[in-house]
Length: 262
Length: 311
Image 1 (cartoon, each protein chain N blue to C red):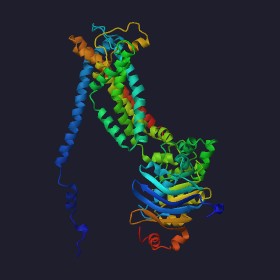
Image 2: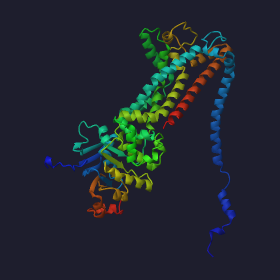
Image 3: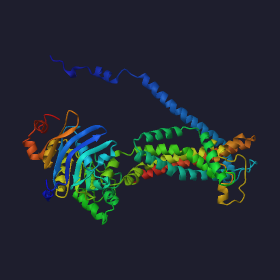
């Protein structure tokens, strides 16, 4: 490969032979994949296959777990996220995260959204930024008259959209979503999925989901992981979602997406 | 004919639903539990009634004079003015020293140094320190703080600052433990959310964890303060004066470095004197001490509720 093979379609995140460990236990082995920009990529696979571990290692959230470490290369625009001198705080500002359970801060709706910009010292009109973030998260009309109320007073689906507004307020390039709908009712789930489809024009989204229909409905690309005999998760098959669901190459994939296993 | 559920006689169903009558073991258990509560309440009420019954006449007769008068060998003139001042200064020193030191230690143990073997060792030792008899801290205060002030040439070193520092060190483990528990009770999801938007560890700790843990920390502080204000034994060793003394017209510095006493010391002293009047004075002193403790606890509850509602 020569250096001039770099093109404008360079993926935002590229994993090269990534292994992830908790202490001596290898949780994920030999993952190589390039996540395309401005698309939704779903990570699917049975429980314990390391989807969440992989997702949380992309923005170095797993640094917070004692004993967690990564080998191989995780590149963000060609720069190694685990390279020497890389500040995890800067990584997380560019690669935001939405968690499984809605986790608004015990603060007002306004302060929830304004928290990221404030700690990152973003200049400009905070009111405008809060409004824009809440609009993009399709929450503005619900909360515009009660911005000073606690974020914890909202419904589950609204809380999760508040968490999405909070994540996009720091203007990240990538948003990681760790089963964002697993604690929500079907209607809220659909709202979040519609929101994701709108957000992908501005952001690159990587989502872990247990819900096959959700992966099929909402994602452009799908990565299927499963657990090997050594209990380490590995990549079985990846590609465009329609291909993977309608024409899987691996029997394991076919069994999983058709619900015969997992 | 098929057996039909509706043909069961209603009397049998009712008897079944009513059960076999009273379940005596649960009744006995409930009575025992209520008796335990009653025992605690009665003990407390008897104590309060006794202290109030003997102390209130003095307080109503002497009024504000009892709170401001200095110590004296004449029971008609003796008051708790100097003791209130000493207790106040000790309280200020405890809050000023034990609060920042204790909370900072708890933050370090819970947020920065988690999981290491050394941290666990320190943690266990702090828990043990909380159970060390207070007289031992008195010895420490005598050796370290009184010794330090003496070495610095500030009188004989037996001053209220040495006493306050001794009591501050005494309650430090309690402050650390309650603060650490309050910090630990903050859900991990709050921290993750903070890190997820690019906050540093300091920002997560200062802007998210500590505010969320604040009501719990505050409760620990005030409980420690109540304990500190009631301590007698360490003050005896740390040089509190048992007899009467005069601060004369000493300025603030002179009062801080001169002889001192505190409310529980005075109460203890008065109970050992032969005159019966002094025992009534002691009861009145206890009422004052109890009033201060209740006020501190009330303040803690007020602040906790107030700051819990800010969300």
